[in-house]
Amino acid sequence: MKKKTILFFTGARSEFELQLPVIRKLNQSKNFNVILLVSGMHLNKKYTNDLSRIEDEIDLKIFKVKLPINNTDLFSNAKVIGSAIKKITEKLEGLKPDIVIIYGDRFESFAAMIAASQSGIFTCHLEGGDITNGYTFDDNVRHAMSKLANYHFTTNKNSSDILKQLGENDKLIKLVGLPVNDFIYSKDYTSKNEVIQTYKLKNFDKVVIFTFHPEPLLLEQLQDNLNRVDEVFTYMFKKYDDMKVIASYPNGDVGSDIIIQKLKEWDVKFSNLVLTKQLGNKNLHGLFDLKNSSGKKVVFLGNSSSGLKETPYFNCPNISLGTRQAGRVHAQNSIRIKLSVNLIKKSLNEIFINYENNEYSKKIVNPYYFGNVSNSILKTINNFEIESLRRDKIFVER
Image 1 (cartoon, rainbow, N blue to C red):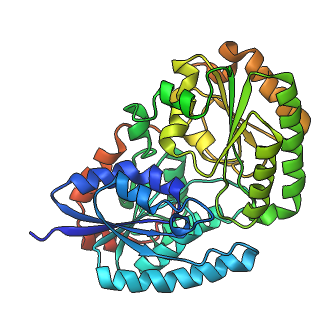
Image 2 (cartoon, helix red, strand yellow; image 1 turned 180 degrees about the vertical axis):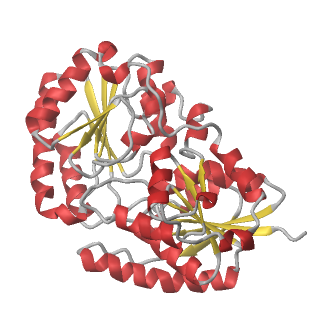
């Protein structure tokens, strides 16, 4: 029997690492020929530009689609999506995969979903049904991708329910959990000693991991919000000489240039702030685990979904700022607060002072964990009857 060709698409480091356990598992199967289509920020020097790193991480055939990422205004995203649909379609036409698997809600992924689905290729969507309710296009794009996809692998129960509300057939929805949990629960992340050495944390008792992304539909508030964070950092660095902040670049959405400029200013202004373009999940999870492995007081601060989805296993406190992740499913270790100087100060101080005896450090239930994700997806795809599943793609009234 001829092997089915499965193509994974990736346009950003964040979603590549989230789906990497699944890519590796399917690549190890004798039933599939797995290939990877790389695009977006992976090939952009301004952001991660990490193609060589991907090649080191996984042994499979990699194909490229370079996109002109120009995020100066909202029209630029639409232009990139249009260009990406054409270029990705041309690549798919040559590769002719049987199945295309696409993760998340990035605009590059949206273009890939349109290209694949409209070319008649069977598509699977990872992380459909999630809700953020922020001032971004994420929810609209994610739901649109779900309506185009033939099959859904969801990360939490609420997302499965949302897909059903969108009219998706129960037969096409498989609750598997967050794929990167396969790495987290097997402790496949950077060791305590290596993390401490890399970020020079030996003499620091408090570690704040900071990632802040723009909200394209709320850009008029971005500069003021960054100034508020600046005021918080100035205060906290004066109050705690044993605190280090590890800050990473934002995604490539409109407004990211403003954030990057502010991060560069902080890199000069604050001696105890470390700036990196990309932490990478292994380092990020190693930093989260310092809470347990070294007794350091670790906090995730910002508006990245990583703070809500990837911290529960470690019981690491997460302070979600503003509205960007307002509707995201989260565990008890996360709180969401307004982007207020006083509220951020108060939250950080309370966590540091009562670190071992607060709500964020108690044993919690991880809403994104349902066992080994990669094995579940491999078993499901092994049993795919594609033509039958295509017929099941109907609107189900509830």
